Length: 95
Length: 476
Image (cartoon, rainbow over all chains, first blue to last red):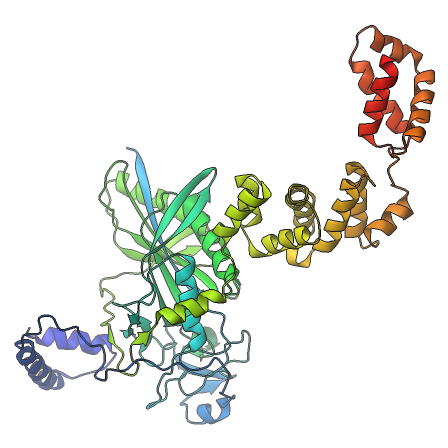
């Protein structure tokens, strides 16, 4: 699979990352390099091997359903760019 | 052309947990904005999710209740999209390997039973809320809801009318409350439905292009939205138009559905397994343990009511349509009432009063124990059915217990045959014309005489005894 410049721009848009044409070119070659590595790995015969969803062969530990977090809104909002009445403010989003 | 509508549902059920899916922040409803939004909820860099044990148990309960395959191993995935109420930039969900696989739910539409196939149910987390109009050109973000545990339940496109879709949604709504995994509060958004609607020429087995009606949180709106959307699609196709796949919103004020966002930039969620979470393992032992803590399911209870209590299929289905009604019925029977009269009274007088007063049975002014003691006074002939209705009204109004009301209102039935005979003799003496009519073959006159006897006893004579004794006297 090979990427073109439009793919890169689309991925950037989906992630809301602004990239200049020069950056897009550089990103294209880096992403293509990564895909190249994956292609190499795909050459390995994996018939009969169950895919892993995690690199460690262990399972999820569960947490008891007990409230452990306290209200730290003041601390968190002290480092937010803009807040009002306890809300984080962001540029208006319209559907 | 005759058209057929094809409907599938995706329901988001908020799980009954104290804390969030991946952190120990509280999920209590209605707190001040962002006071229940911890580091994980607001997605500070470097935080890690830890899965809630309780929500996994809820998912297992649901899987057992719909007789589904429960995956021994399921995987969490990141669903990537950009929106300010989703600070991580992705929702943690399950994609290829959901915890609950194929199952089914039986619904009742009119007199027909129908099985709706459930494709899957997966664990995921809710997003925060955007508040508009806080400041010009800005949106306010409240992340209290971010990370709240959800179970998304997806059906096959098995429903063929708005009525079937609503019947499914109601059945599911009762089931999740019955097994105690959701509070069912639709106003607070604990149970929200997305409905996929498409139409096709009747007889065709190819699915039409669907439009998805998002976020319906009332059964009434669901019915209206599906009916409007179905007609809109049929009209569009009959006018030679084409249906474009879209997400639509229902406007309750106009009763119309309207496309929300076009899918030209088709939602590309770029799912991939979340490296922060390990596979979720559910063992046979887990399933056995969870099952042991589950209540008897409505279907099983319905069967038991029919075979053990001799109730009709309809009565058994109505009594088990909600856990509260079923609990009330069982409590009434356990308090010594006979099953059939108990069912009749609960589905009759009790339901009517609850509807009139807009009360739920859990808050009934007449308790199951009180109803049972009332029914006992009918079966031991202390009072007649008619008198029982008066006692019931009085109990509902809070006038006391059964026996004291019977006493206070003088409703005790006269079953002493001597006393009843005396009344009959008086009535016969005073109504010689009627007696003559009866003897000349007019059957109707008999009922009139019974009526006179009941009236003379002020309604207190045992009607069966009056009948019997009167018959004896007239044929003498």
